[in-house]
Image (tube, rainbow, N blue to C red; front, side):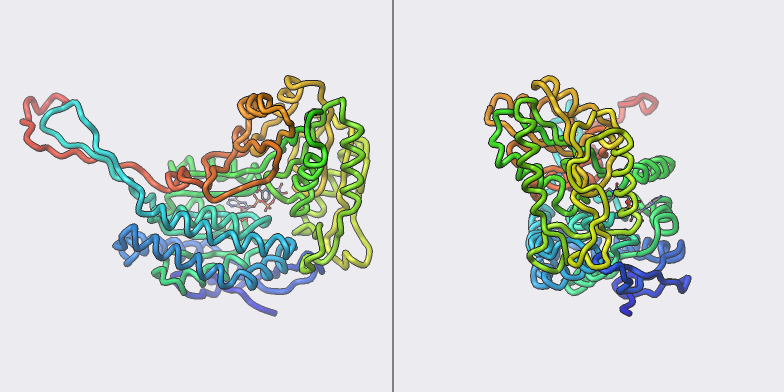
Length: 492
Ligand code: NAD
């Protein structure tokens, strides 16, 4: 079986504790590789390497333009290796090869964009009210960044963190999910090949408590950027607060996808399906609550069921497959338990509702695409993130009702609106409490468009120009150009 070591200071590093754990292929349920199980000593080695690279190494002396060139070069290497990386992600994560090939073709754009942005970070000169002084600001990198990622999109989500962090001049320790570590380790080697100095990118694999929490608490980590469960995000935020560390958090959601009676229903139904069944519903922006206006409720449900029934489940490596397995065994159990909860709460089961079996599903962790109708927004199935192919349909009367239901959750990540009325589209874009509003589309993302959550969905923004600010701090520099010191006991 293949063995993956940590990646520390530009080379492979066996776990200091000498232990490994297995990673599984969700399509077969079988182990396919062994991953280094990290300890506090491994975390310390990686953070010290990142700190050395930040303070002493050649990285600290590179110009921003040179950093940008390295980022663009690694983008080229990712493009070169797209197919290989996509296949590793499919094997470890169960994502569709069709989706991963698209993702890997797109990921280089983050490195090109942030590579370009690296030398456009500018300070300001203050006009200043005080004669005899010159005052300007510098934008400086925060230092060592801990990038903690989940299992649902390991490379894409790592990219959203690494590209702006490196553009800002930080160094990074990546802690991938224990369920999907392999692709991040393969990724790290490409930074070495691109010419990044040793220690700029490190990967420590292992479990949340041993590696994740230790990393968060390491005194030399200046910033934590995290994507994952809200409970973990809360624990990280609390631990980071004790040392006044910078934090950005992307914590998932319970996003409303809202269909008005005047919508193009073909498009809306396609959008509803892609919102919840793409990536087997395992996306933070899953449109897991479908809000449908009374007048078209029955018609939308009928069309939706007809389309969802055609979903082809099977081997994620096959380009024909539309719905793959759930990535992890615990997640498979969790999704099935939410289906039971919804049934117990009285939601009406319209489709699916259990494990998917049959030849195409092999021995993998498959759940049937599941749709519940007549869901009340107060039910747990409408309030809690399932992170699987389970859709709740909720009726609404009018615009005010839709806004009230849409906002009546503690999350606020994505939201979709399907309408032909542009006035309504603008009004809804103002009234929805969500970091992203998609009008007549769903799940669109770009390296140049800010992404992040309102309310319990998180703190800070990824992507776009704002993202680099998450890795910078401002220094104000004062120069005396001739002001005389008057009374030294009085503040000037
Ligand atoms: P998680 O939050 O437990 O894990 C995410 C990452 O954080 C992993 O790398 C994990 O090892 C690490 N981690 C765990 N505990 C930590 C701690 N105390 N300190 C620092 N790091 C820690 O999420 P998961 O186990 O991957 O999935 C659990 C649930 O999270 C899912 O069921 C789903 O609802 C949700 N989820 C959300 C997203 C998202 O994009 N928002 C992604 C994956 C999972």
